[in-house]
Length: 110
Image 1 (cartoon, helix red, strand yellow):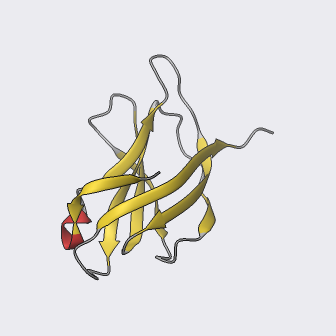
Image 2: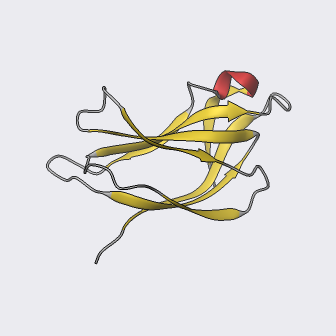
């Protein structure tokens, strides 16, 4: 199974996103992402929010469109309830949707 955006082709950039709401009263400090994606997305903005409407950018990641799983380290940031990946760059290859087969958001515990 996979998640797929409703946007296709170049329409993905700046519109398609996948994220997670950790729940009322729960804030996480995400420091690593495991991501396996399909489609032609070459870049994503990692963003966080406390209320789900105003987003702060944490990092911009370069992605490989090769259907492999990659680990991405994130810089220190604030804790937040909502985290998402917003499509930022697209090769424009074909009319396909952005597909995410696996995503894992991790805190680093010391």
